[in-house]
Image (cartoon, rainbow, N blue to C red; front, side):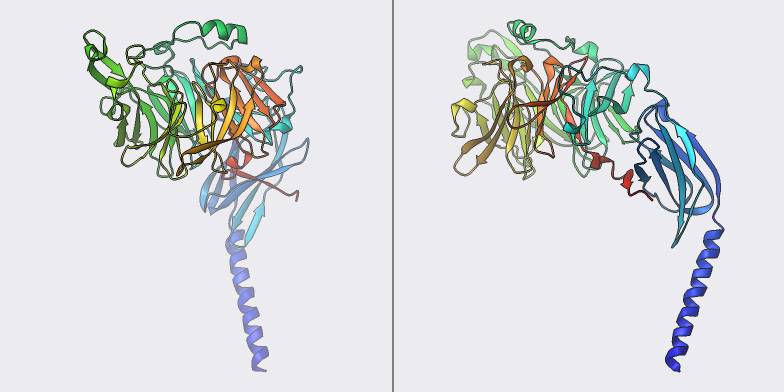
Length: 499
């Protein structure tokens, strides 16, 4: 009897709690729903929902053409919500409904409709061609990020169909390079084109070979100098901007070639340390200002955390090339991290990759011709770019190979104890894709390769056998082309089963 009474009391309590929660939830109402297109983009919509009392809100939406459903992620109990609908198809009919969630209960609005307009004329480019491979599946539902370094500068994410699905523009300056940060934002280097005048028009192999006969340009701004850094979230909102030319950091007014951010929001980039030197000591005349390379670590306010100069680790008196390359002796063009957190630095003129201890500044080893590792000379690289560590621990780089005029992608397994470098990948690009400068290469999740032949303005997906599976043709010279996986957007929306 006691047991039955206890059960009745428990059930009564559950019913009362349910009734209370239902009463609380029943008082939540949608006061307004407003649709807008940020920056007038055809591939993005914001839905602003105002409630009469705080609750969670998600927006469930789908393209009527395929019915595939997506849902934004809730952002806490609030009265006012803005849901960002990103990566939408252009010129497409969509339906959506607002779901209000409060405790165990939820309320779904009626179904609304909107139609995205056609892509903006100024964002229509013939990235893909019918006469070259263009199967969208090659990008494995991801996108390619490209940066335009002239004015107005922009960052574009292009999908496998050749459509821009994400875009950010800055009117007063160009964008040289951009990449994803560990916190799911975009960090970018901004570059004033007038200070680094180059021809950004893609060239064919014959034009590139003729251009190579000219001496390497040198100048204080470097090949791809930047005067500003910016962070943007994936809704396209600029979080902050640092202009070094207006507010120098310890006298540094420009950076070059690379910018990265770690989990603590620290910034890592390259700068140009100078050194006054008596050139008569090496057979020259008079005093000259040598320009080298260094690593700069700072926070987003410009406070310098760590700084490294190559001149502190270089014997000028034993350098046979110091007179020839006095104003750009090493041409560091890529900065990245090894698995232990120490730095990997690509020195193009040395044809080497250096590992730098991020605490002591010690040069831990040098990889390449004349370096510390025993390696097959067939895999010596020249004027290389884009060094990074693959998931399997191998070191990958884009070998411009200006000695053979045929570019390739190389990977190495490094025995750092016995100093032996074993080649694990030698992916040769067809000769027509030779890039004497710039470029990048990454392994895709499906094990194929995303390769940027920068000088030709071409981005390729190739398999391990060297077959071209997908080809993008840019109207400008992209410094790099990095892969943006679909999972990047998990903090904004998710794909759901049809309900």
